[in-house]
Image 1 (cartoon, helix red, strand yellow):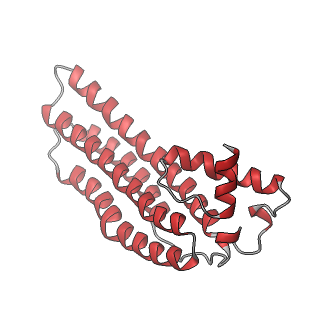
Image 2 (cartoon, one colour):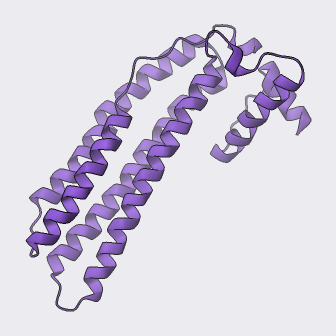
Length: 198
């Protein structure tokens, strides 16, 4: 582990990592560099590429947690409707489909992570800026449009229980609006050009 952390600090760690490996490496990187007398990321005047991407990943993880919660809620409602023999089949089908689309939304959101990996591997400001532009377009053209389509599907679908429809879609709309706001791409932060030497 010590050798791996030294490689990260020197900017030579460049083989493919899993998401969990990345979490461990980046957490360890900060501790290792500080222990060797280097400046911690908090003390830098300009954020490094690693710091910016790590902050972005943590924000994305929070969004994925919110999407996962919506998936669980949709599945719980589907099971509740399915268990009620007097309930409407249309409602069960619609809620199940919404749950599946929410799960697909989670995969789309996670897809941005692999675009950011390019900047993390190359460790240059230029790569970060380019990857950031691609990620922004990806979120705007695919993720946000798909998110908006989920709510549109729920509103356009036929429901037999109007009260259930109103209650569920109102809560879903509020949650998706929060996720939409969190996903709106922001202008890229300026990353330190000397990241590879951090």
